[in-house]
Length: 391
Image (cartoon, rainbow, N blue to C red; front, side, top):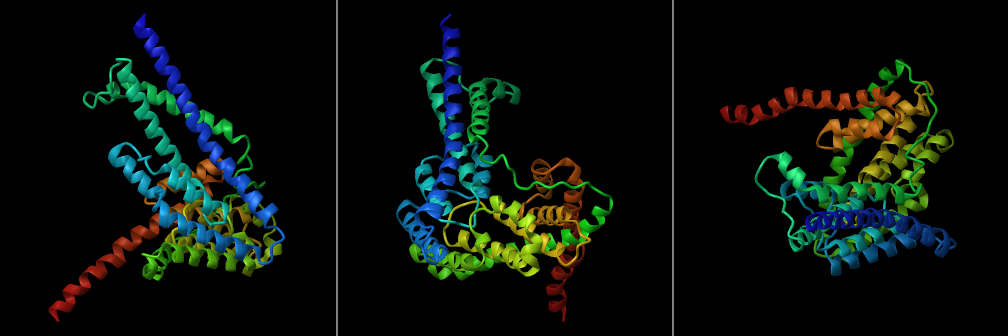
């Protein structure tokens, strides 16, 4: 009887802790949306040169966070690597990381919240696992064994699994329609001709992805002299962001809420505006990350790919706008992500399944291009030193 009571208590605590983690993560997103509205649409709405002033001030605050709170949180790639290697994500610096990420996102960073949410959920989940492990010791319950079969370990870890499940449900319910609009809505009937249009648009997206990876390296070199001066470094990023936003306000924030208006108003915006918005997004996302601003890169570069695709559909009306957006977006993500298949899965989750063929072609362009590069260009480069030595 005592053992059953202990199991019930452990399950109840797992439910409470998991639900709390989901609610806290969703609450963070609600807070960011509320604070952005308060700062940009209430407090500073009548401020001359609003974007330049607010973003520069944000750069100062981000720099102060970097100076006194440390370089937190981790990026998505770093967090994934840590989870794979250790099975956990350190939560010691979680408050400092969420503070810096909040300042970055509230003050208009051309970055998304996905990196902060990854760190928040990963850190809190690790903390929940530690708490449940301590509770099991106090209740004299069997601990999760590191030895034995995988099935045995999974069975023993049922409190963690229960907490994770409840946390995911609580996170989804607590969002309360915050992102119910999704990234993009369009009414379009797929046609087989779309697959042909997807090839050049996929090439465009792949080129944008290569440009973004180049800009990542270049911006890191540009700010290298300011490596030991976090306040000046972040101020530079904020000033450049604010200056760009004076002319192209679409470069502010993650781009998620701006994607539908850009899609609906593509003809009014025109080729050059869409082109500059997309290129500016790629540059600013890379620059802000290099200057210490915190946030995710995927939402803004997806927006950049969409605007570049839409730019191509303006002078070429025969190219359907949905095809231009999806093919370019899928190819760009496939270049940036380590495994192109992940890009295809992501596109399948975000957009209607009847458009998956467009994304498949976009990703296929990247896969074919990589294989062609490996078979032709790299062997030629490797043979040059040997031939030079023989001469």
